[in-house]
Amino acid sequence: MDLEKKDYKQEQEQFFEKTERALRALFNAAKAKNELHFCLSLAPEFRGCQDPGWCTAIESFRAFDEYMSFIHLIGKSSFSIRVVLGFYCHLAEASGFYEVPKNLLRIVEGKKYNLWPFQEIVEKHKETGKIIAPNANKVLRDLAGHAKELGFDELAEVFKDAFDPDLRNGYSHADYVIWNDGIRLRKRNGGQPRKVSWEEFDCLFNKGIIFFHILKQLAIEYQNEYIEPKTIKGQLDNEPIGYWTIHCNKEKGSFSISNSLANPNIVKDDNKKDVTP
Image (cartoon, rainbow, N blue to C red; front, top):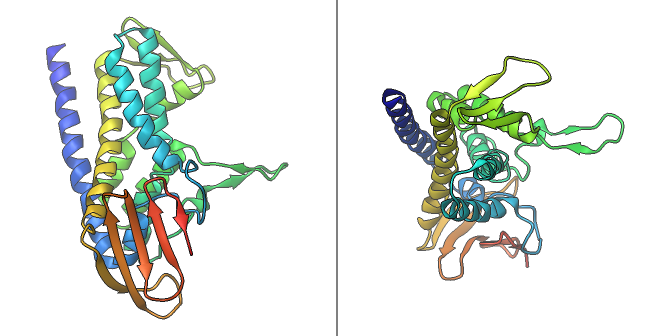
């Protein structure tokens, strides 16, 4: 058992190092390719003018902090495991935040920032026409495949290993049993049942935490590079190339991108309220 724990600990350490290295390589490559569109990508779920309180990416940050605080307050029990599973699935499904790496991949590819970067994998119900949002498995497969196509092999592995699809599916569909030897994934509708030992579960949970936390910290780190306002040349679409000023205001909690033309003056604050005067 000690050897098993040591192996899982090493696996987590290796995943941490790989994740930090692979994501930083993506951020640097996108910034070098197109700095204006790189900066646009640092604040996810930009949907135009909207009041505060509509950004699920910001909500995922709040949920992260609240779950972490709560988990540290409660003792280990079947209930606490259910809370941890809920936390794990929330992070896996936080595709609003994962628009950041998706847009960065697009920019490295030579494309531009996209308001809805996962639109290609969104489906519609055949009868009602209602939108069917892609789940975590589909989003992460898309990210892994995109990274692989662009030669980011290590990053593709990170996206593939960040969250375990069986564990996510088991919780999402109430297809699991908490037992004394771990979490049993029944797969009642077919497939080979699987037992996730407590040691393995800790490792899987920590990988999800590592991935989300590093991605968030890198986005903040690269925003902070613009605490001293920086003016660059660029264009949003097909308009003439102009001068754009990027500024991260720590006091106001805002990240702004403004150009020298009369419009637009896009402001992104910490609640993702976007204003175009």
